Image 1 (cartoon, rainbow, N blue to C red):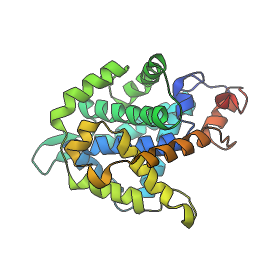
Image 2 (image 1 turned 135 degrees about the horizontal axis):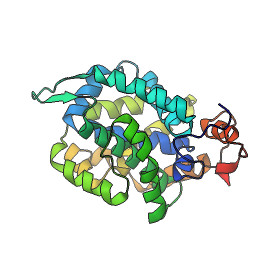
Image 3 (image 1 turned 180 degrees about the vertical axis):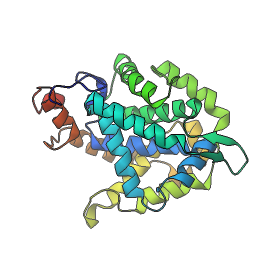
Image 4 (image 1 turned 90 degrees about the vertical axis):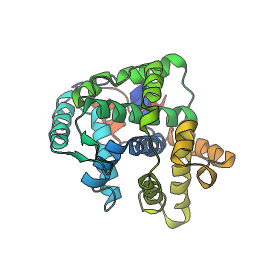
Length: 270
């Protein structure tokens, strides 16, 4: 596979964003909050996945899929995505309110893709490094090819389109105890490989994730009061985010992808 390009180019904004583990964790939590706010997605995720019983395993699988989509050789990424779509073909049913859903419904896939992109970008832009308008739009455009492969044929490719989709979904999002259950799991389950004295960092990052969810969504979901992010939490998360952006791990998917493309290990860290 030496030299085989990924779905996204090495000089993309995505390659820089996805190398940062803090942006991935914080952005991923924010994305799931937004996804669980949609009742059809919420039912599919909570009833057809192992998230409640094995959150770490589920997160590892999701993270691996994200890394393969961004950094993996195109041929391998396409095979993986096709496998995910076949799995989704078997998932469907009714929400508790009686609304029918299918995991491969293009409308739901568009929302999942958009919320993931939004979460990762907002986490990086808020807690790691500010990106200008052109860079943020490039990030959304980066995901167009993978979105089509996943079946998200109407996924937004610019900030303006993301804003329009959020507005379109405004009346479809609703509060649920599932969102609170998810956040409790993410705050308390041993997700991050941290020694006990540093375990509080995981809870801090979950709060940071809530902080980048649009305010109107937080209010609708009841993520106010004790769920509000304090100024000191934002400052501390920015400190960790900046530090994480300088940590070069030779075993990371980002560095391995650079090597495959004949680029220096520190290509994304300059």
